[in-house]
Image (cartoon, rainbow, N blue to C red; front, side, top):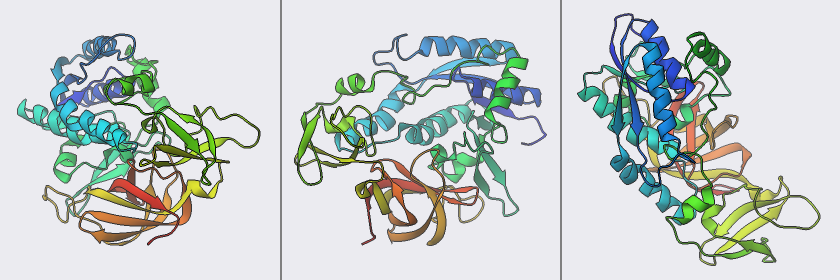
Length: 371
């Protein structure tokens, strides 16, 4: 952070992390303004979405911190750029991660544009990640120091021009410290539960929610050998590695989702967490996006050279050593040192060089061996 006061807009969500972000920046002497984003309007109600309560909390925090706050609506952009893709992926049998797209298309694109148009020099969020400007003049996206909360995985699609304007004041803090700061400042969000719902949509019964937007087709649950062991309620409701909600009785080890046969509308299930079909030695990914520019000042990221890195194929997993190989300009292959469990098409594979988040892509497929 610069010691010179800056004009900073903070995304206030009504949660403790963004509340403390605003508090810290204000204490550092910056000119801070809060913005609460309302990005979901369909069936907005107090039961699931809590937008009204979150906005009240954000306003209360702004009042205590001593900053102005605006309520801004990006619902149109969210529906076009994030939710449409979300539905498209589920319909195709994949499992998307809306938080990744939210950050790239809403928080650090539509919202960043708004912040700059309103005189901000930077946009701050409550993400647990770090940014560092090194001697080469480039802005590096780094893991948050709290290994349990590091959110660089969700930020990997940020381009250099977005990262240059981004601030992550919580990157060097751990969650208990954040809650302590909030409590000492008498912020009403100090003990508020963290949200685990869909980005901007909230916590609601997922199956019921998805059925409102996509047609469902029941089908058979089958073993890899073709034995029918149950019925599924629609392939889109299941993800690879899923154990809960399968409803398969009988003795023996638990059942897990190992694959989907879209053409036959069959869900492939196996018994045992260590079943070989749940492990993949490699994956292919597309829609590649890189955070580091070739040189300072470039707006777009440059692809890192092929070679040895580590990777996460899901949030909070341990870094997996791997080799990066390019298939063409927008497709790559990751070959793992050790097979990885439940690598899921539609999720993101994010590449790291130590603590540096380099970027990654959307997983297209996984296999036991590279082709």
